[in-house]
Each structure stands twice: as C-alpha cells, then as structure tokens.
Amino acid sequence: MLILTAKDIEKFYTMKDAVAADKQALKIYTEGNSDVPLRINFDMQKGQCLFMPAHIKDQDIAGIKIVSVFPDNSKLGKPSVPAQVLMLDPKTGEVCALLDGTFVTQLRTGAVQGAATDLLARKDARRAVLIGTGGQAISQLEAMLTVRPLTDVAIFDIDIQKAKRFTDEVKCRFYHYSTHFYFSQDLDEDISLADIITSVTTSKVVTFNGDKVKPGTHINGVGAYTPQMHEIPQSIVEKADIRVLDTKEGVFAEAGDIIDPIKQNLVSEDDFLELGDLVIDPTQCRQNEEQITLFKTVGTAVLDVYIGYDIYLKAKEKGIGLDL
Ligand SMILES: NC(=O)c1ccc[n+]([C@@H]2O[C@H](COP(=O)([O-])OP(=O)(O)OC[C@H]3O[C@@H](n4cnc5c(N)ncnc54)[C@H](O)[C@@H]3O)[C@@H](O)[C@H]2O)c1
Image 1 (spheres, rainbow, N blue to C red):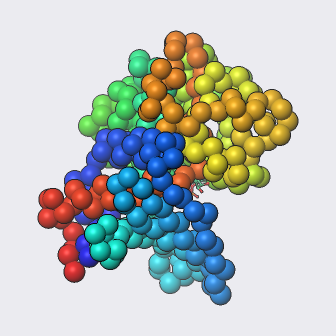
Image 2 (cartoon, rainbow, N blue to C red):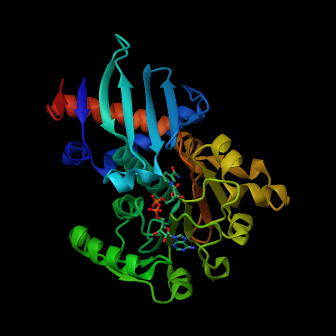
C-alpha cells in the first residue's frame, strides 16, 4: 500500500494535471459510466463521519473518501475535519493507496472550478475576484491562474484581517505568475471590472452584488452546499446565458442558491447543463464575448476517486510515497 501525504503529492502533481483529471472524471460521470452511491453519515459520540465511495465502471477504479467532522480536535492540536482517500487495486480488491484526503479535496475542488473556468470564461479574461480566503481559497486561486494568464486578482473576505494576510501570502507563493494580487477595498468596483468571479465561502447570504456584473463575465459558486446557503445572487442565476453544474443530482439536492430560483420558477432544471456535457460537446461552451456564464459545484466522490487513482499511478511511476 502506497501512503501519499500532501507534500508527496505536491512534488509531482500539478493543478494542470488536476484540471485535466476533473474534466475526464465529470465526462465519465455524465456518460453514466460511474456508480456514486449516496454518502453514508454516522453520528459518533464526539463528531460525525462521512463515507463517500465511487466506482468508475469502464476503468474499474474504486475508492472511498472518509471525512470526519470532530470539532473538539482543535483542543488536541489535531485538524477538526480530517480526511483520507483509499484506493483499491482493480486486480485484487486490496487497498493499494492511502492519500491525504484534505489535500485531495482542495486539489479536486480547485481543479473543478479551473475546468469550468477554462471551458466557459472568455479566452481574454485577465481580471478576477476571489471571495473567501479560507481553507479552499489557495487552490481556487491557483486553478484560475492555471487556466487564464490573469493580470489582476482582487481578494475579499468578510474577515478583513484574514483577507489581508491571505493576500500577502499569495503575493509570495504565486509571485512567478506576475499577477497583481490586492485586497479589495471596494468589492462593487472590483466585481464591475471582473472577467471571472469565484466565491468560496461559508456564507448563507449572497457574497456580491449581481447588478455590478458586466456582460461576458464567468462566475463560479463553490461554497454553498446546503439548501439554506445562497452565495450566488438570484439575478445572476436568472440572467446567466449558460448555467453549468458539476452534477445535477448533487446541486439540485444541496445548493440553496440554485434550488430556490428553481422553486420560484425563475429557471427550470432543464436550463442547466453538467460540466461533463461541455467536455463531451464543446460547442455548448461560450458562444460570444457577451454571455454571462455560471458554474456551481457541490462536489462528488467521482472527483476524489478519479483523481486519487491518477495521483496513485503517477506516484508509482515516479517512486514517490511510502510503500508499505
Ligand atoms: N464544492 C465543493 O466541492 C466543495 C469542497 C470543499 C468545500 N466546499 C465548501 O466551500 C466553502 C469554503 O470552504 P473553506 O474550507 O474555505 O471554509 P473556511 O471556513 O475555511 O473559510 C470560509 C471563508 O468564507 C468567509 N466568508 C463567510 N461569509 C462570507 C461573505 N459573506 N463574504 C466573504 N467572505 C465570507 C469566512 O470569513 C472564511 O474566511 C465551505 O462552505 C465548504 O463546505 C465546497
């Protein structure tokens, strides 16, 4: 069994690899070539654990992500949401790899946004806004930088000090992109200039003013994952020319910012595509420079399992990781 930490994976697996893997995973999903059973949740005495399995039929790739939510862990100096991804050997059914699930989640969630941004944003998109500077934010930013040569990225969080610290951090970390990263002092102004907007927050209310969005902008909603959460303004869901989801099943069940406009008959389920549809038929991507495009993701185990196996194969090839 190969054990792969975040540091191991970072050594050889790039965001570009992850974007390509996520596109492929969602193509497989939309083609009906995967089994993704409903996540199993257990309440334990000190927290909750979630089991998220998937099987990719043609390639016979099977695995599971296990995520625990144990709020008191921070008192023990441990992460409060530990996660692992386990992969099975298709020849023997044995566990062949154990990967850092927190890192895999960040990578695949950044990459799925990168895949959507690549397929939907204008080719000449140069200015972006990132809203939310928590645990997922670095990989969200890296994904945008990977798929478009951005000149300016405005960064915002309701926790202003956190946003400023994050901005300083990314100036060092991503200096090689020659991008101007700055803390947004006027979010409305930055939204009105943006070609790409990514919101990755825990907010229950909309995180930006939809009236400020200019024609031609691509918007990613990454954070909201319960029917009570509404990160994306309803006006954007209504006026977007192309609306794309990672999986219809997941988003229609979980994301309040999409569920509510459907309930209010502002849009219908038929107005949405899956990202896999765009990979299968790229003519469904943006058709002109004026269209507003929207992508919403809540995540799916297909992404964890497909990317987990891709990482495992590449690590084996390169002799990286602890082989037990
Ligand atoms: N789509 C997916 O596949 C996927 C995967 C992982 C996580 N998520 C979701 O993404 C969200 C962010 O995850 P995280 O780990 O970065 O969370 P986090 O708690 O580390 O950070 C969330 C950040 O959002 C900020 N925020 C909250 N409300 C805001 C608002 N109105 N405007 C601006 N900033 C605001 C907070 O101050 C915080 O810095 C969570 O809801 C998480 O469940 C989605």
